[in-house]
Length: 209
Image (cartoon, rainbow, N blue to C red; front, top):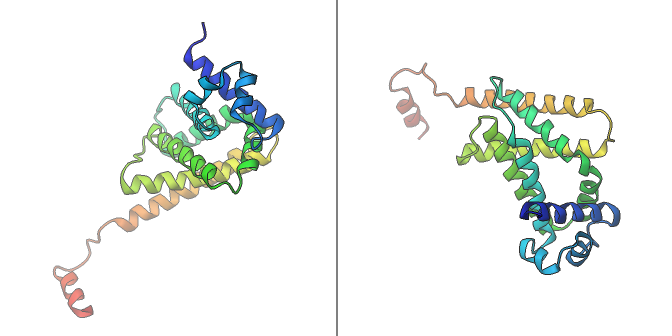
C-alpha cells in the first residue's frame, strides 16, 4: 500500500515531468491529478497551488542531501562545498524540468518570492549542517550571502550540459574561497582595538563634538 510520502512524490514527479514536456506555465492542477492518478481534491488538499508543489520538491531535496551527511573533521568551507555539490547531484535528474520552470516563472513576483523563500530555507539548513549558525542578524547575512552564491552556481549549472562538473566545482570552490576571505576580513575589522591610550576615546569624542 502506497504511503502518503509515496503519493506526494508521485504528484511532485508528475508535475516536474509535465513542466519539462509542456512548460510550467500551462500546467494545471487538474492535469497533474489526471496524470498522477490522483483526484483533484487529494492534490488540492495537500498542494493548493503549483508553488506549493515546488516548495515540497525543494524540501525533498533538502532531506535527501542532509539525511546521511556526516559533519566530518574538515573546514567549514569543505563542508559547504560538499553540501552544495550534493544538492546539485540530487537536482541533476530534474535539470530539464528546473530549466522549464525557471523560464516560465521569470517576471512572476509571487513565484519568485516563493522560490527565494525556499532557497533561503535550504541555505539556512546548509549552514547549520556545516556547523555555522544561521540565526540572528549575522546568521541572516550568512544565509543571504550563501543564497546569492548558490543561485550563481545554479545558473552556471543550468546553462551547462549533463556532462562533467569540473567548471561547476571550480566556480563553487572559487566563490567559497572569496566568501571565506570576506568573512575573515570582517571578523578582523570587528575586533575591538586595544592600542588606544586610556581616555582617548572620550577625548576623541569631545574633539569631534
